[in-house]
Length: 397
Image (cartoon, rainbow, N blue to C red):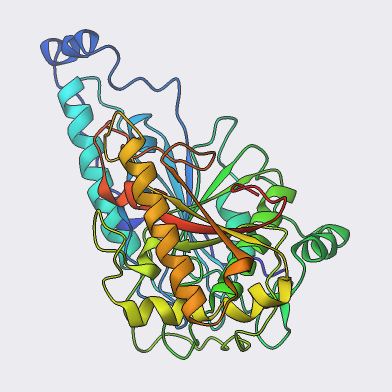
């Protein structure tokens, strides 16, 4: 596994001098705030980010920004690593404040969040290929006993050993076998025990990289979930898809071959289709672009037939601050029915499909409020999906 060799340095864009309270009067206001700048419960964060030639340009999504903000409010720090073919450790910087005045402290935290967000958005790979595994390992090394987690932004298509998806067929490998190989060679990340890895943009591609099919994306997610779990952590896929072009002039990344959609899906796991792929019109079961939705669903036709067992199509919905699940259950069922109808029109026997709707009351529901307790439609989007499961497989695997 590649290791970073560059010397860590302070993040220049986040190195603003923290203002200290200048006098007794200013300092006393911290007491009234309930220790607004308490340094005793710091939670540190790792970030793996940097635009690469095989994925859309990095833009920190709202859900990842919320995690950064939460770390800043504990006065923790962030370690940033660019997932170049040789991961580049950019250094560690404080997200919070050492000020004793509550107002100064909060202003410092907001300023640091703005600075680090801008800094991350501007990062780019500096060496050919991509190494997420090595970058995650580096980012997790100094998280401490109560880590906030590691945020990863990128496609997940690593192109360096020991997890090289390019030219190897690894994209379609059994996740358990991938983990067994890494474990036998002692190549799993060492510091992920109890750590949540928040991943944004997995499977989203650009540049010379061919888009992934639904089965390919599903297996990519399963591989990374198995790797993170084997290392003692938990993988949480962030909801916002990455889109757009890769920046020009970046070091080359070898494209990963994507097989035809006849590739068999591993039906021992749920197959999740995001709302961003199906594009339902808000609060309806109508596809905003029926042709685009059919193109996505057509990828699953051969594998459903290969499976030969009844597949349940389950709709899930966001809560959107609702207090009752009745309407959302009905909407999610209508969306599942719409997906079934589309699959049948594409040639799947109706006898191989059944539908269900759970609304927002299910095992995989995720909070829709940010660190400040405010409702976020970007976070709510993570709960809008259609999940396909074979007999005996739960919605959460």
